[in-house]
Image (cartoon, rainbow, N blue to C red; front, side, top):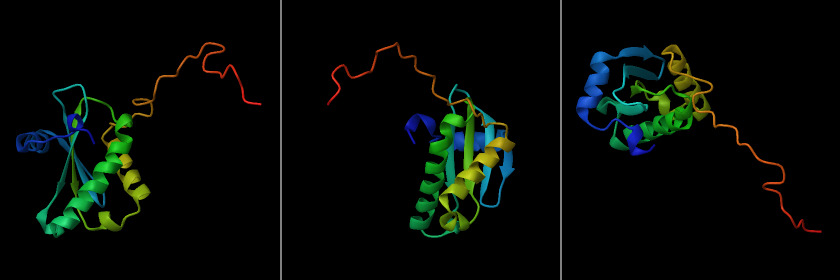
Length: 135
């Protein structure tokens, strides 16, 4: 996930958790607050109680990648903090993890089917066609 889409400083995380609304699922907690910018920014938290640094980082990477893939479908203008709640995130199939993230975003009314849809490209007749097709 690119740096412009991430929360990085502790005060940013504190603001979202203090001012925002909370939504929970079996493996994740989502905190949502209105952002101060026109883009969505995300932060990821895994407690030290989760285990060793290797396990925490793996869980954080899995959730970050799942969010990165659905980022175009998230309504812009919000700051999100995803908190990993249990070790099940490590064994959960990736598609189930994505589904759980989508479900949280829908409950928070941040999911948009058309938010990240690419604009249709208009191609004029003959453009993009190979003028000398191979025999």
